Length: 581
Image (cartoon, rainbow, N blue to C red; front, side, top):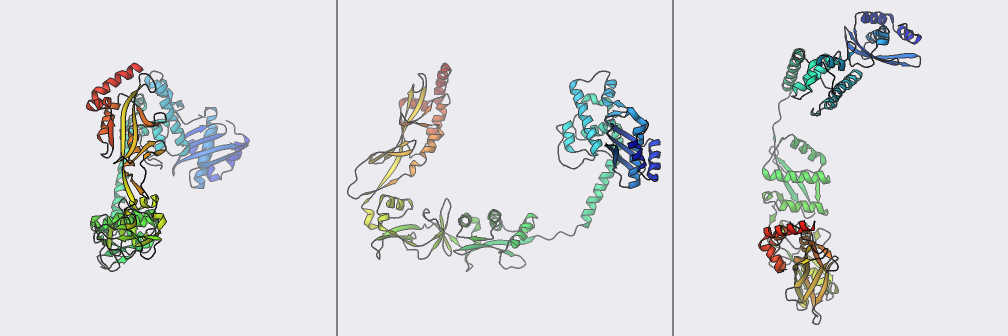
């Protein structure tokens, strides 16, 4: 092949030392791989200093080259040798690296098999060719390349894989290294590829290299152990909470110091967090509970101090006081342990002797003594109230703030109303003497009138229909549950200035109970309904069985027969449903 002007200019651009070395490399067959077209050439050159990859690209009427060798003379020689090899091959230059001695790998396989590959087999060979082409261009192979060949290959790193001691010189050598990698991981590959696979030969080449790597790995491991300083001894610590009526802090005591030190700064806490992650802290079980609870709060809120004006800090203290294991680990400023007692605080509403226009709401102990100082509300499913050194259970919350004063004055007309006396009932407060004779308490209980109704939507269909009402135990008030909520049906007339209070606690679970059976409200029926299916009898039986005792059930005879034998009823409903279908 006669060189054109661009080729001559490229060859002449290298220093004489590179040209001579490049000519020698080409003459000795050191260009072990070359492929491309008239615009882009890639090659591999085996120099005495190493194996390097070259790229030559024609832009306009000028060739530009690059080489992976770091030495400029060697890099120039490899590029020079690659261009000479291109000129030597001329029209015989392969367009891709997927050939062995100028023969496509698929032809080699078919020749050894004595048959043509089917579509599935040809697709697999194409995958190998694509991976090899990518490797030749980038010089690396990754887990995500291997998983495209075998989906069961596990992706464990994004770093380049080390699958060979010396880079493969052709696609057959490349495949054999891949086959060995699959073999080592007990992953299958297509049987037809065995005609170009020699695992025994690869294993011999890999044995020394794998042994060297294992030895090097052991030396590195041993060196790390030998260079490692002695392990520090664990740190014996104890934790406690120091609390006042306004805030609380975590304190720590080490075995060496024997003094309690508050952890005020984030840096102090992070120091012990680091030791905690290193499993370097030794503590008793209550300290561990306290530390891990505090860590959870600290990570969520980023605060080192528990400010009791913040509700979450008070909820945190509620969780701590409800842990019997922490008894003695929460103290006040006098170093006295907080006592958690079962004697309940409550509100007492009374006529205020100093202000005839107000009622007084007074916090009292179980013995009836007035609480004389403010307490801190610790919200939770069970409300707690913290004083200077005692924690009490107490009445339901009604204040937004957590600091609770022992006495509140409320305008008389606010309490002397339906809403006012209901408020007193909700917070568990006793009635003032002036209202006791006027207030009537009504206990409302849910009542389910249940029946089977046929033909609501079609002649053959049946529905469970439930009329849901709330009835006062003495019949003085009746309400009905609708889509919008409870509505008044009947109310006996009041006598004089009577004030009614309704105990509705048993009504709150009703919507959830109806939802469990898939009941929806029907405006025409003024009741809740659900369609009967073959699964209904067992579901209904279980539902009735788990019904709260406060719900009064009025069940018609047909539904009672289902409850007596739900299995037989299920068969009957299944037959009916099949006839409908």
